[in-house]
Image 1: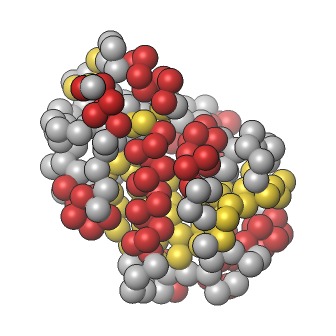
Image 2 (image 1 turned 90 degrees about the vertical axis):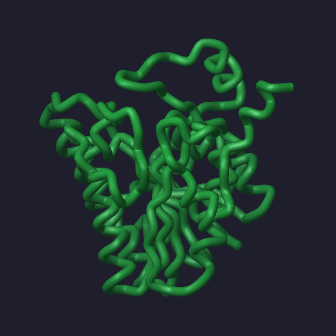
Length: 250
């Protein structure tokens, strides 16, 4: 398929592009030029004209944009962070989904975050059970964004998979930090290796190709033993689970 990576020049897009382009033809929309050799259109997710140009001729999209990331414990915010987060995480997403629908593109994947939750928890039993109660403006607007995805599934019949990712890392970072995992009160920060993350996006693209009007959220992390995040939904529905930890056991 022809896939548009919105915000594909950012951290997550950069580390997953080499894996995604093995399976799909890629185009990137971003305000910055991507590091990899892929088709590129310069522009912002908040620019309707840029979105229309970038979405023309694609089969599906992956939204990788995120702005002013904060943890799931911090309520401090500035006026700049408020404007940036609402512009990218909410306004931009709404414009993306509306423009995609207007052009007849009804399949997409949205990148959310575990920071949409209040992170002072030691266990996340299910995507539906834990509220989107982040104190940070970043996590709060990411939670609102999931509501926008559900709205477009319900009212416009779009298929949208929402991936609540955590700790995206390059392979080099993953291997290095696995030696000494940082503590993230009250639990641990489970990093997600780039290949595991890319495979989650590929599985999500398969998910949105079936049926219509579907919107589901999935925990995506490197917590292979489900010690803090129950990722059984991702395994059952997407057929995905982290596997890069197996390298550490060799």
